[in-house]
Amino acid sequence: MAAREYFATVVTAVGKVQARDENGRLRDIRAGDVLQEGETVITQTGARVELVYGESQHLFVEPNETIRLTRDLDATDYTDPSEGSLTDATIEEIILAIEQGDDIESLLEAPAAGLVGGESGGGSSFVRLLRVVEETSPLAFQFESLSVSEIPSFEEADTTLLNQLPEAFTDTGTTPEDTPVTLAVLDNDSDPENDAIS
Image: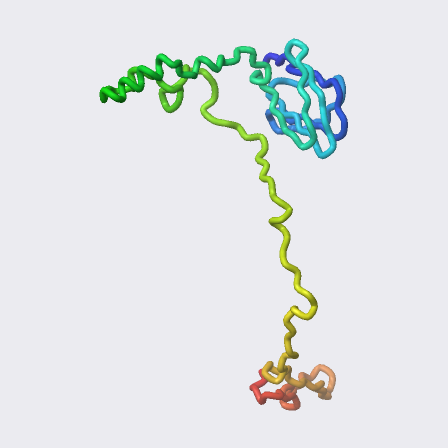
């Protein structure tokens, strides 16, 4: 397998900054380290890193951020916003077509979406989420507090309703050596509820 070219170099790294390769292995990174395309840079709380890539372009990764290093970071072929906008002449044609009851689809460019949209090989058919952050308002965790007088009290439980343990007494017997003895061990035991003892 051919070695990949480096993608970026670490200029400065403050705090715990790691790089995760495509196999999931993590390594700590510091100034001077080289990063490969496809690696993911992860900064912990209070950490930040500055990378240089492409033609001396700088990328700053702030605390608690995760950024995957792809060629998209170095995109130089930006789409001109005018390519997707309608001109006044096109709008007039659409209005006229609607007023005449004509089909306006022939006047508009097909959108690059769906199964037939876009050029073949033009990218992925999915979006990779590196991190999902859900902000929570501190008010979501505030609850009314009860004063001591509002805490419900419970009366002491009536233990007479509970099954009482039987009273077991020690049983003894005497027998000559090597002679078995038989004792009725339950005869001297009792149960407060007069339940059978076994």
